[in-house]
Length: 523
Image (tube, rainbow, N blue to C red; front, side):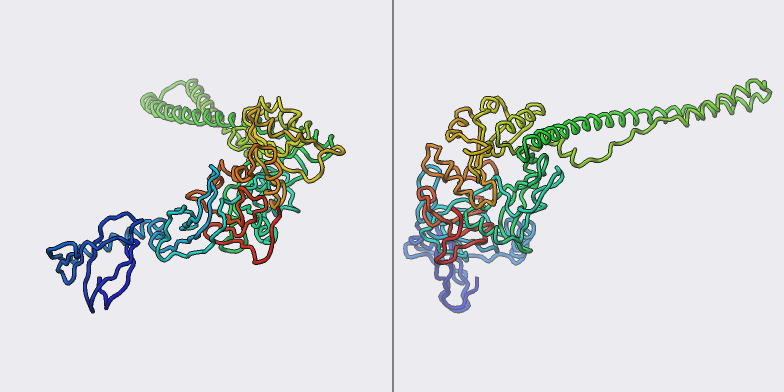
């Protein structure tokens, strides 16, 4: 390396002074000492103008031969090929600045808190976190000392920005109706710590569309919302309307699933008929070749014996007519069934490739949902399930079912509304029925709903329950390496029920920050 004068550099985490004169060539080697002891790192050898000069604790000398120019060019070329050939890894590591959150406290699942920690993000993902994490060179640092860092919350039952959107077909997804430019509602949701939602389509009842999963991160082209999966589940609503309307809705859904089963049989029949048709075509081609060979033999015989009887000629003409009629009566291609996108989605449900999310709150609607699950062997999520304690035995007999609980807005103890047992969660745990919590609305009330329902649990902190919502996917759970969504709290949400988010970071971008002196958010 060529240096002019004394110049200060950072090499391998240690600060070193290189060069002692103008236009001086210097090589420096270091002993491999523990990084935590970098201030004590000593220079092993310095080469100046090709002559080795050992440190004060060493003696002797040596010479270093420069690399051949051809080998130097080869090494440079290989380095460039490595960068160009792996742009997603090597280039990012070489050229992308890391983002460092300094001095945060990180609550853990065991109840302990990692105090004064650093969280290092590169490419929008956490690559290192903890008290021993050192900030890389040239990193962008955000001083958030004293705040508590957790993963973002996931709302498994959200209708965010879908107030006026109605759907009544399996081919429609909730993502189609999501308003990515409704910044007012989305920012209110981010202010409550929710960074990811399962968007539930809304409809008049019956099959209303498909549930979509998305992050509330900002988009490069403007707005919010980054789609993760458009097909989380097929949404069926058995809760809307009067009792008679709900019975008709149940029969309508059952009829649609039956039609899908019949369509599968039709498709299977078409497949087998098509295979038979291909086999018949092969056989017809073979017969045609054999007939051509016979005609050639007959023509040879006719030339040898031109004095055949008229009767034989008539018989030959008759045979030729029979052959022509057989050619016209060749194998007929079967008719292909018309394409039905809605039925194809229902077939995915019947084949357990797509679960169903059934909205049912009252015991009668829950019983209808149980009948559908048993008849068609569905993998199902029962959304609402306020009166689940009344059909608990039937639910316990189902193998592939879970409950998505919500805190209803109207009172459950008056009028004809559904009732909820205050010990429902304990009963579900006793029967081994899995459950989760959703807001059932605009997602701003998720943290409050979790706090209310966590009162039925033995744990005093609602945070484990809040982070468990998305733990089954790649984005939920406790803060860890690879996570892309971080929420910084004013106060420890594992201990303080009044803790509020201060900033929300998604994919390395601060998408929301609490203005100074405000108390935004819904809790």
